[in-house]
Image (cartoon, rainbow, N blue to C red; front, side, top):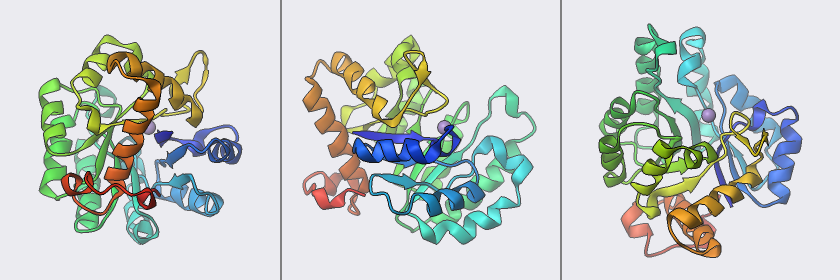
Length: 256
Ligand code: MN
């Protein structure tokens, strides 16, 4: 199984959460919100196979931590995984658009030409994020918890980007519409734990099982087949070929 967006470092016991994901063989992208947090995660999780820390700079933390951009740059060579990064133009972030854009463009310019996988935050800034990803030729991107317009979603999909779906999206009408409008070869699963709960408790990476179960209904597909689709999408994303070419040559060795 795959948890493509989990804030392992924000759990009460991060290492125990990571070890559980490891034991349950859930490929987990441990996103971070600041470069200094990534450094901690990188040290603590270095022996794990299924859990990979991602270098992040969360748009909502950019304005008050702008100098961390230098640390982002110095840590970039340590990992293939980037996130959470992006833009947030929701009302709580008024007055932060410019620093957010400056940091995000700086990040994308650093990544340009390198083989990095990105987990992207795009709330209320979906079209702007898409425009920047295309401008900086950033190809291997996962839109995490997409909640924007369907017209922008269609552009996202047609440009070969991925979506990671969480349980909150399955619970809402708007979320289900987004899932239905996404071609199945672009869908990945995420918990966004510990922010998103599942059945009244804090979601653990293995709870992506519930998202797979939800997808069986939407796709009218057996559970085992849903799991296969998600893993094959992951392998395609991770392969170094372009998405179209890679689909024909999936290899288990392409896993992280
Ligand atoms: Mn998040």
